[in-house]
Structures are given as C-alpha cells and as structure tokens.
Image (cartoon, rainbow, N blue to C red):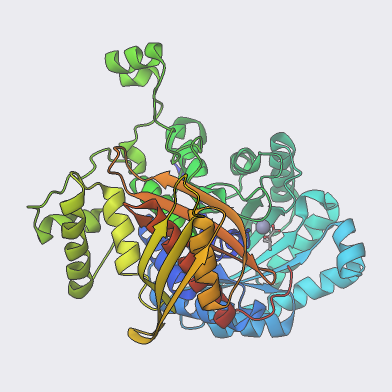
Length: 517
Ligand code: KIV
Ligand code: ZN
C-alpha cells in the first residue's frame, strides 16, 4: 500500500521572494490557477502582513481557486495572524501558516528571546491561529540548526496547541541528506503526540541538496514537502517541485509514495512560471530544461533508436513535453487554436480567443510554421498585458557601421485602462541601437532605471523564429523583469523594456513596505 505525500507549493511566497521573480496580482492568480490544475495540495499564496499588495494578492488567490488549500504565511504575532486570516477566510480550504525560529543563533541574535519565551510565543500563536482556522501549520524556522531536544519540545507544544502540520525547515540549506532524514526519524519517534500531526519539510538549496534532503526526510516519514516550481526561492532556491515529484514517480518501487500532482502538467506549469517572471528555464535544469531530454552523442542516439530505455529513465511525454508542436498555418481555424490553448492549460473567453486567433493569423503571414511557444507568446502579449500604463505604438531604429551614431525614434501610448491618454514621441542617439531605444523610452516615461540584464533567445528554430528578449532593471532599490517577443529583436527589446517599466509601476502600486522574514 502506498502512502500519500502532500505537496505544498510555495512558489508564490518563498519563490516570489527571490530576485527578479516578483509577480503582480493578476500574474499570481494566473499561476495559482495553474498550480490548481497541476494538482498540488496546498498553495502558499503569500505573506499578507508584508504589504497591502501581498494582502490583496493572497485574498484574490483564496477567492479564485477551489480545489486546493490556500495558506497564508504569518509571523508568530497576533496582528500577523489576524491579517493572514482576513486574507484567506474566503478560501474553500484556508490554512494559517505561522512560524518562529528555534535555533540558538536565530533566537539569540534575531529574536533576542530565550527558549522559554520562544515556547510561549509559539504556543500562543498556534492557539490563536487555531481559534480562527481549523487548519494550522507551524514552522520551526532554522530547524535543521536547532537543538534536537528543544525542537522536539517545540513540536510537542504546538501540536498540543492545535497545529495539524509541523514543518521542519532547512532554512539555510545546511543539512545533509542522511542527517536530515535522521532528524525527521528522531522527531517522529520522540515527540509524544507526533501521530496527531503531519510532519513536513521545507529545504533550501544552498548546497544543492534541497531535493535530496526532502527525499531523505520523506523516506524517514515526512508526509508533506514544501517546494517551488523550477526550485525558485531565496538565494539558491527551494526544493524543486518537478524534481521531487519525478523522483518519487520514477523510483516508486523504492519510496512507495503517491502524490496528487499530474506529472503531465509539470512542464506547462514551469513554462508558465518562466513566462510570467521573464526568466528562461536553464538549459540543464532537470525535468524541464531545454536539454533535459536531448540526446546529442552518437552512442546515445543509437541506443535511443534501438530502445529508448537505454538512456531515458522517464519519457518527455510523462512530464508534459509533448514534442508535438502544433503546426499552424494560414489556413488553420480557430478551433485548432482553441484546442491547442486548452491543451496548454489556457482557458480564454471568446473575445480573448478571437484576439489571439487574429494575432496568430497575422504571424502566419510572416512565418511559415507557428509553434506552441509562438502561440503562448501571443497569449501573453495580447491577453495578459491589457492594463499596462505604457504601450509601444511605433518605432524606428537606425544602426550600422557608418559615421552616423545609432539612433531611435519612438511613439509610446500612455494608457488609462484601454483608453489612450496621451501619445508621446521622442528620439535619441545611443552607443548602439538598444541603448538608443532604451534612452528614448526612459526619457518619455521619466524613469531611468539601471539595466542589470539583457538577454535574447530565439523561441523556436529557424531564421524566421520569433526572438524573446528578457531585461532586468533596477530603479530606486526596486527590481523588475520584462519580456517581449517579436520577429524583430529590436521591437522585442523595446517591448521587454516597456514591460519591465509597466511591472515596476504595478509593483509600486501594489507593494508597500515589506518586513523581512
Ligand atoms: O525557509 C524557511 O524557514 C521558511 C519558513 C518561513 C517556512 O521559508
Ligand atoms: Zn524558506
């Protein structure tokens, strides 16, 4: 008989805390819906006490999804817990997740509290949370560097106070797999009321061991794993959802554990995240990276042709990499596009569908074959960018090897919802065409951010492929990522820069001061 593991996804909370992964409310709701489709058990939607923007995003997610638990993270303080509860109380299945550090180093230097004080605080926080919400999780922050006996006492106390899940984080990614498994086994054996709660793990990847540590803990009896899509998260990130799930799936005979994740939704989910945060998936990323199923060497290719099992421990199809890129041409109908979008997990209404269909047709006039990635890029451009403040109307760029320095001329619409408030024109010289373009945009908007990263990728093969440009900018301590896709990489560059500025504006609207965790 297999055991059941609960998958707790924290992409929208711990993941979103990582540099460049900030999402706006609409993007968070979109990703939450995809996580629901993926089949995770719990979505940690955010940290409502951090800011008004976080509160509203958590509340919107709590109202948008139905078949999944929605957790709100709160420090072990009554006002945080009240705020967290306010944000999730409309969820079909709400969970309050409260945390407090238990290691000597955190208690002494960060909290400035004794063990006794921490015990009292943890117990009071859980009791308060349990008086509001039937489902309470407690996390002992920095558990892996805590004294084991003290940690066991904390677990006992919070379970008695009403915690249904006790989470043991490896907050700084310090643990080693054998040691972390031993810690979980110790707690399950030592904590007298351990049987009344689910033991969970939350591993960071500072030494590259987050998934290994989680698996070791699961073998030892942990039954909830806290993970993120593509492993995004603080510093080196969190345990990667797709790697953990596929390890359990591929080596089922070893673990004998099941979870509710639909493995065929793994790739679409990671792609969705990558599109939203504007960060391409790394080539060598296990399971979902572009090279994860590519066989380059002759010996491997020969083996694969004779029997795929020679070099493939799982099929690309099993993780949702269909390999059957739709080929849409000028004559494809809207039904084909609708079917494709549904398969890719997009539920668009008729008007959105008509917009995307018209854009696909327009692209088909310029490009022989339209692939999944092209359609997805159009969905993002045409459907999900509607409330932007700045919108590119027209542009011309001059560059070459001659004596005239590169320069650009640009027309930008300043929007109020769907209405154009003002049309602004500007031209500028630059060191190169991109520099000239970005100067034009910065002068028009009055925002002159520092450009941290500029990256161009062809989204499919072929010289007529669309190019995706990703930029990362920083302005007055706020970082933002933008993305643009077009057949012309200069247009894609302008779109990416404008997108980053739009996201920066939204971030400023939605976020206030964010207390550090
Ligand atoms: O890493 C950590 O300890 C956390 C807790 C808040 C669960 O993210
Ligand atoms: Zn964490």
